[in-house]
View (cartoon, rainbow, N blue to C red):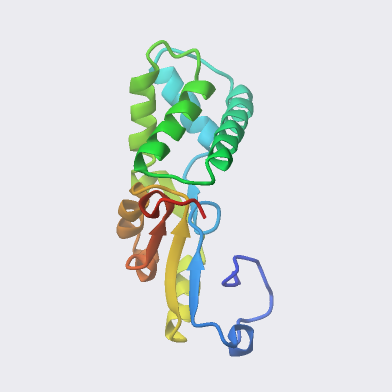
Length: 178
């Protein structure tokens, strides 16, 4: 069973685990949502459509480095964010990762749009069961994420995430990363 904290447990969830808890907010990516295909493969296919072949391992390495650089920039600014900052952040990550692409902006736009698509994401298999159980116990449920406004579209389209849809705390909309 997946516990509300996202950890596998053999022990059933009981009320004693939730004493005093009135609300549970989940993170999005890596907790309830996962890319339907590995990100490096998605980037590789995008690069191929834009005329460039880059090895998946190279993409993984560059993606990690580009992500770390952007995290460092966000830390320097005190973790402030906005929709514009998130677009710029991911533009830099894509451009730094797929640097061989001659026209990087159309490639970035393609990837940005792809990750807005609910079919680009899958949920943990036990998500619906866990959310239904927590909801049945009268808990307030929501999601807090460093994702951008595209998250609302994704959550709205995924039936298993409906218990969270009315309580989304999206960093780019509130101005601060969590």
